[in-house]
Image (cartoon, rainbow, N blue to C red; front, side, top):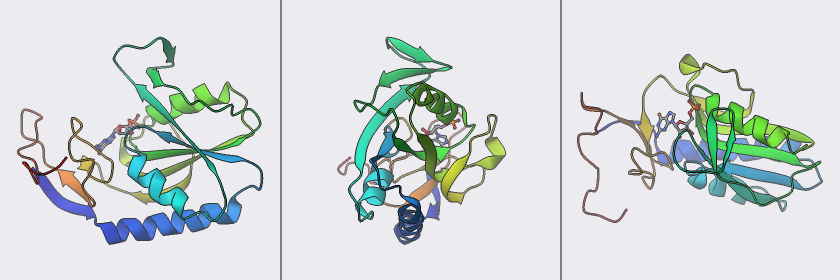
Length: 187
Ligand code: 5GP
């Protein structure tokens, strides 16, 4: 079941505005591209990029540690690749949360092989106490404790992504959530 609210919609909005302002002051004039790591990034990336006054390109990548795919890199499986050519471009890699760091580390290595000019990580959340692989987060929303959170793009078994606030999810002893907020409503 849903536990405490970790960040409500107003706090999220304040964080996203600050990040957009910070990114905007550093944005290079030439063709920056924002690459979101699906699916958790979607609400964050769309809110963030709409606050930037200049035109930026948007693309998406999806990786998984399991499932069917044809291409692998490191410990992740490439499920959906970007369509853009990123050679000599400035990449802003947008992630919902950095936990152990392995996903981002692998995605960065995958993109580095395509010779961009730069890659900077933008993450809404980070759990530093869980880190196994060091990741340089250039633009960070906020750190959180070692709790499992859902909402604003973050899911549990694909549920809860559409919640406007970010909540702690209290897992039952069997690893399953005790119940869904708004069950029966639109998802
Ligand atoms: P990492 O590779 O850094 O361990 O994990 C990154 C991914 O794990 C995130 O993109 C996210 O999909 C998932 N993840 C890690 N912590 C959480 C969490 O607290 N809530 C949710 N919903 N997903 C998480």
